Image (cartoon, rainbow, N blue to C red; front, side):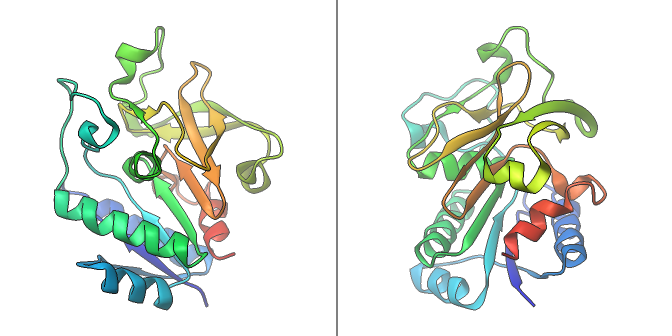
Length: 217
């Protein structure tokens, strides 16, 4: 069975989120574990031992990483987590293994690959869906034909949940936008062995378990 590493964050109270990832990966047929990398050797060892990586949610990515001053709404994560997550991302990509970024993980990977973010969606889009409403709500997205995401969820309309106030602006190197909401907010991007999604499939009670099956290759 394929082993999936989850880079979780317990600092901001997301233990429940991490537990849901463990449940959903198991339901998809994988063997999940939670881990971090203190150095490059740790990251390389984990990339050798696991088949795929999930970078999960959390606080905002520091805008200094993409050359911007912080918006007043920004909340910052632990820089040690940033270092660990980036090491893991680069190690898994370098090993040719699949990487999924969810919510904050989506934004962080985009930034680490040279992209930028909209720091606060209500300031960037008018009118705008209230994407930070809650993870139990739903709104539509449009999935691009011919994309990897379309091969997983199907092309055209899909329903997702939201809990974020930031999103991808300029895609990072090697990434292509593959889903957007009706107001123009980027909801997903993809590259070789990389899938970035803004919503929270771990809280959709199995509706999007096909995303976790993609990690199993």
